[in-house]
Amino acid sequence: MAREDAVRCLRCLLYALNLLFWLMSACVLGVAAWLRDYLNTVLTLTAHTRLEEAAVLTYSPAVHPVIIAVCCFLIIVAMVGYCGTLKCNLLLLSWYFGSLLVIFCVELASGVWTYDEPSVQRSDMISLKSRMPNYGLQRYQWLTHTWNTFQTEFKCCGVIYFTDWLEMTEMEWPPDSCCSNQYPGCARHAHYRDLSDLHQEGCGPKIYSFIRGTKQLQVLRFLGVSIGVAQILAMALTLTLLWALYYGRKSPELPPPMPSDDSAPLTVTHGPSGEATESGCIRAPKVWASNVTATPNGHQFEMERLS
Image (cartoon, rainbow, N blue to C red; front, side):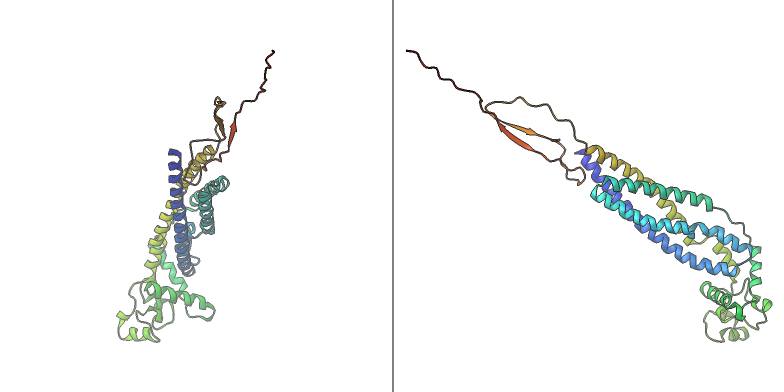
């Protein structure tokens, strides 16, 4: 009975861990996709500068293709583990344990290999001004779109201040993407009448803060550590469940035969007799009973009385 309760408890814990694997893997994929979009924008603006190298070092462990592939594979492994736990299949549970061990080793190796502290200073933000003179040119439409997108989403203008556009380009006023309330010609109107309609903060500090790490990156790191701890716990529980199932299915030795009584039927039972289970894993063995009625097997001899 104690073994049945232990198996039932192990199965419930594995169900919960597999559900956590699904949820955490889905969260990692979603946050990584969001970060990858913003990272591409930052890499476009910081191309050929020290900021580009720092951004790659910071976010490569989070958006690396290996990590994305591992999360996708972990979802499939969790489904296999759920089926193996439900059916109490030793083969599926063994494959589940081996897959978790491989995934954990890959995650650990990838984290150690890609971890590096970026060396970036605030003075490196000045190098972003080298990307500004190409704004608005026909052959650099992609760069123009990137500047407009970044300034709109991060609510910034220029590198340090909006006057950077006047210094580094031949423009007489900043782009319209610098306006807090955008409409055609808003930057010209704000430049000559009300400068408060322009974003007062530069994009350089925004990019610097992004490279140093965002809340989304901290969430990814927390999820990565949580997945690793959950994998270790799941592997320990799977080994325990495999041990319980393996030794629970081994048939004990048959008890010695009971002395038969000629006057009563003899019942022979094959298989263990005590551990019937309701946990769904340690199945109660089949019982075959055969009733053998012992009858006197002899010859009756009648003696004739000799007269």
